[in-house]
Image 1 (cartoon, rainbow, N blue to C red):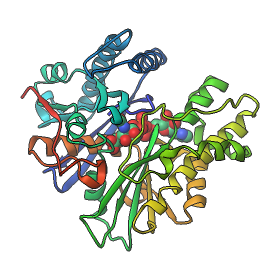
Image 2: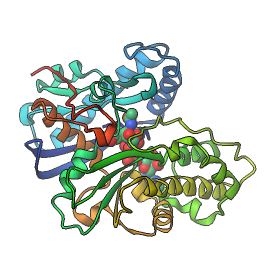
Image 3: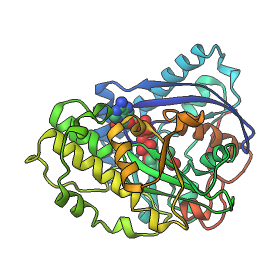
Image 4: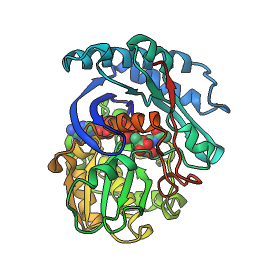
Length: 360
Ligand SMILES: Nc1ncnc2c1ncn2[C@@H]1O[C@H](COP(=O)(O)OP(=O)(O)OP(=O)(O)O)[C@@H](O)[C@H]1O
Ligand SMILES: CC(=O)N[C@H]1[C@@H]2OC[C@@H](O2)[C@@H](O)[C@@H]1O[C@H](C)C(=O)O
């Protein structure tokens, strides 16, 4: 999985029949270097003008070759660390890199060559997970909810649970333990992307490590209020977002700490704004994704939701590897023709499978 934060490739080994998760195995991360990130940022810029999903103008073709190559290297390293041969896994789930997500135009584009990966490893590769959902009236995202549900079913929870992924974009899965069919999901707003972009711009480093800067700053309320006026926040789920969906006003008048605090509060407030759109307020929030490491973001989510907040690792899950694990799980579901999305998770017209199988 190469997510919208563009920090690197997350890898995970999962044993599953596509319904139950037998075991969560080792996981790893292969970082992109600075040149890779720059190429991805240029590719996302070029993708803004795409009208059909197979166009690769400007730097997009180079970016796709780079993404494929890096995944091959990442997987080789991972398989060797896990002491597995190329044929030692039954299937590889390959999400690729989203460069454009515009569900209202029926367009979502993930770059990465599944055929090349399958040919290299001699193992079936499931890729292009989102297109079939869009073709059936869905948002094409989020797709992790069925995996979140499989995990929540294994823990004893009292009352509804929200699993919150804090990636570049943030998304929530609402699992009501009283009603296992009542799965609701949506993107909530920005996760780390705006904080990362701001930090890169102001400090040259693309992360507010542990939320350190934000914890020392003061929130500029008028900026947060302005950002929260976006009509996205009052729309009912299911709904999804492009990484660059929000136009942040000029923050050059704010110190690094105040700018970071303001954008961190924006992400946290956007999360809490989803509560009135759910059947009941979640009793427990389980946080995963890289943003789980941002202590100030997690603290502000606790304050804004007023609920119990835990990091996924506290339940024996992995905050860092959840998405990669999810796409392994979804790859098996795809091979078996099981749904990847439901009307409540993406707005798809009926439970719908997806993914394209290369090789094998
Ligand atoms: N120690 C840390 N302190 C603060 N932020 C962190 C830390 N570690 C990771 N992050 C944040 O997490 C991000 C990576 O998160 P993650 O890998 O979940 O995102 P992603 O999978 O790329 O995104 P998405 O879920 O939107 O596809 C980094 O870009 C950074 O902003
Ligand atoms: C189009 C796309 O790649 N969306 C990502 C992004 O990152 C988080 C959020 O926005 C979520 O909708 C999705 O990723 C996760 C893995 C998902 O599909 O569930």
